[in-house]
Length: 74
Image (tube, rainbow, N blue to C red; front, side, top):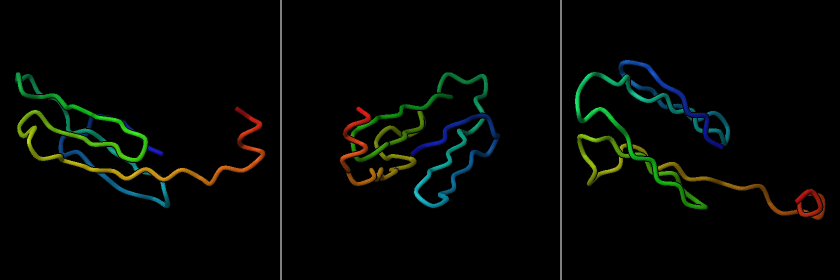
């Protein structure tokens, strides 16, 4: 699970249990003040505009095991 928010001038990341808490760095009035966030089934990758070659964060996602109850809820 990812809890995503903004804006903190320095940005911040913490992991509590299996939950990722990501606060994006405060956006300034610059053309390169943006993020790219890529989602896949097992990972969330966060890039900052200043460096799209190297991810700022690579967050592994873990899903609870499937059970009859979770499948029935679908």
